[in-house]
Image 1: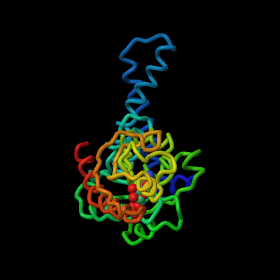
Image 2 (image 1 turned 120 degrees about the horizontal axis):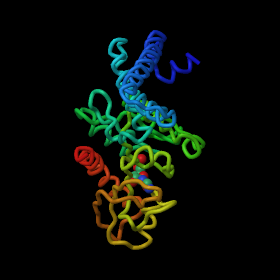
Image 3 (image 1 turned 30 degrees about the vertical axis):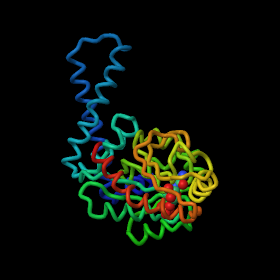
Image 4 (image 1 turned 135 degrees about the horizontal axis):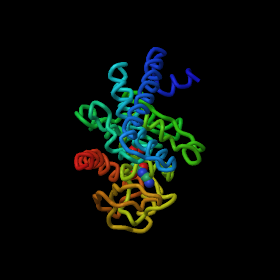
Length: 291
Ligand code: GAR
């Protein structure tokens, strides 16, 4: 059990002891304080006393634990721990759960070559407050994993069962203090659990002008092929929030490019990639600044 806790919290054996001491002392202290506060009121009914007592303990507990952690040298651990609890119980929006240095940590989800992921990484490489902290990928052979390796960015390879029917990797994202998710060519639908854990904090880039050419099966070359076959005169990119329906979240940004008679799905794909690379990183930065 101790080994499990040690790896879950990523702490050394000594730190684990200090953390457990902090939990024990902080917990007892909050009980003492709650009893002292309750004694100020003359409540005889147990039915009222007990829930009220539990309420006061719950309020006192984080303050006590944080205070004790200063003496045990574990303040930074408990600050992070309480922020995670706050996000879990929806008391804090993930976007505000920034890490202690004040940095907004982004996770980039991608399934393919990762040219957009590379541009985003390049853009934020020296940024003072925004950092690409994690690459999330569902394909072991995807180019984006090589990019993550070259850039020394941790990568999380995910599998269907946990993503769609398990915890959707929310705890792992919280471990990396992720507060914003960018889908850059990620081809799986985002499950409800993830959308709920990151409300208004997941965006996607789509290689066409939504609402046209969106929905299930509409990704990458399929989109460009459909646009060419429909003899459209222009196409473009759409950056939008992610909700429970494919490509239907609120639009944040669109940019267009013209289609010539000589264009094929391949040449259109190249034009669209150029538009994406030019605009996506800057749109992400503006969005995070506004928040
Ligand atoms: C991008 O064109 C992106 O718009 C598209 O996948 C490509 C990924 O390229 N996304 C979708 O089609 C989502 N429906 P990249 O791996 O080179 O960044």
